[in-house]
Amino acid sequence: MSDEEHHFESKADAGASKTYPQQAGTIRKNGYIVIKGRPCKVVEVSTSKTGKHGHAKCHFVAIDIFTAKKLEDIVPSSHNCDVPHVTRTDYQLIDISEDGFVSLLTENGNTKDDLRLPTDDSLLTPIKDGFTEGKDLVVSVMSAMGEEQICGLKDIGPK
Image (cartoon, rainbow, N blue to C red; front, side, top):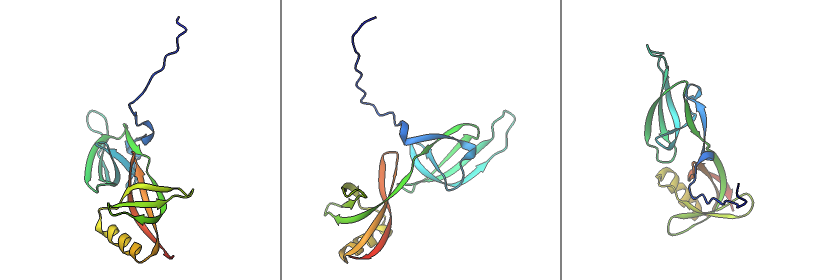
């Protein structure tokens, strides 16, 4: 046995904490699932009966929570699926820069400057209009699997 200490440098991210396993048969409508490596919200679940060779299958129709693309997957109901850890956080809007980034105030008083304005016009227009009118705006940021995006807006009154 050697007395040398071995140091391992890991540059790869296993992504272990981004998802957790859940049995396919227990995932319901409005739940979340990972399909083709993308976090999705389930809009439809149908379960087929067990066939001649065993497994009942779950057919998932889901919408990507960031790109709004429709994805489908069929998984045996007894198998595990990856479910993303999805969190929603509210931040107060401080500033909008010319290059499309927003400056947000976190709960502990720090600023968060790494988020872009949403591309969806139904959110983009009220955020820009409310900001130019000088309203106090709170944006909801959804994060899952290392991605973040503004997904909602609340007006908390004038400054």
